[in-house]
Length: 397
Image 1 (cartoon, rainbow, N blue to C red):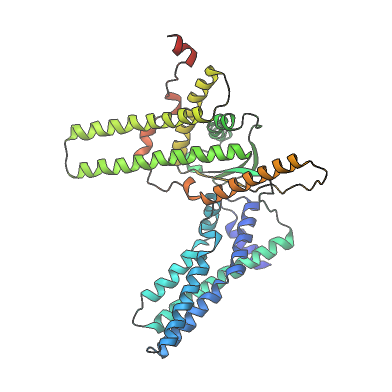
Image 2: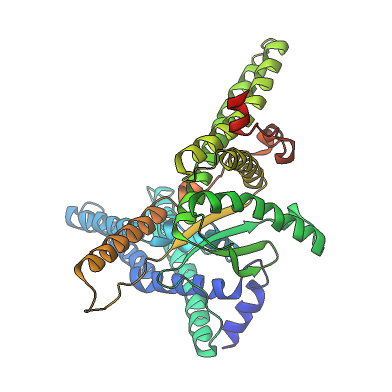
């Protein structure tokens, strides 16, 4: 138990919520039990050692290739190869990534490729990797078992639940209540129009969990809001990536000493284009998904969504990490229900399962890993957006 508590004191002080940390540890422990990476590395070691003693034996060479392929293919199946952004941050903070899936196999392959003419040296490196992996997962097993024994808080989704996760770097806000209130109010302004547009009947988003050092917040959501938020984040990320690509081209022109006037014109065009693209995305999103008949409110919502997406773009470039996740509900068991009701429930469950799968498949699409310093100034400020005319007034005019 002392090992568990020592590791806990060292690591849990970082920005993770205890229940979420417990969940991450459980996922790591389960991944180890499912894949047994230490055994996979041992099989590669053994076969490579055999090659060192019998370099010309085709059967031994074939066994080595089979062991290496097995190691690669097995580790590639780890669900932790593509963790959601906040889980990834937790895994990074405890140094877990290099012991997981594809990253672990990269260590194995590097040890072999760096010693092509000396298999015995590669075996030594593999032995070190194996020992470090064993040590890490032994600590994980101790923590997971200790947490279970102590009934430590555990936080994960239940069937039928959906949530939005926000990881907000504290460097972007001070620690006073006023500053925190301002930060959370900005996120409210980001999310409120999205909720109204995609699920007008949804209640206000409720905080499920919140942790510091960075602000890690999970908000209970509805599936339509989850889908809409995901759609908006992917759209904003696409605009940000295009801005970076364009800025890279401008930088290359600068290196080639092109006309300063022409380069300045391109920069100005890019700055205006960023704001235009965000507003276009907002207006298209409202046009596609607004179900009401109030044209004035529709126009107001376009303005609110433009402000929302502009703020969202700023938050992303400031380092905020976002994620969405849900678990489909379990089917109910009521033999008395009529056939139509059963069919409706079946269709609904199928839709929820498809949504959950699509969110799992698109984890990477919500991540923004580009260098944002050069484009942050191009985004403008949401409060500076000039609001459009109500549509009825525009038509009269």
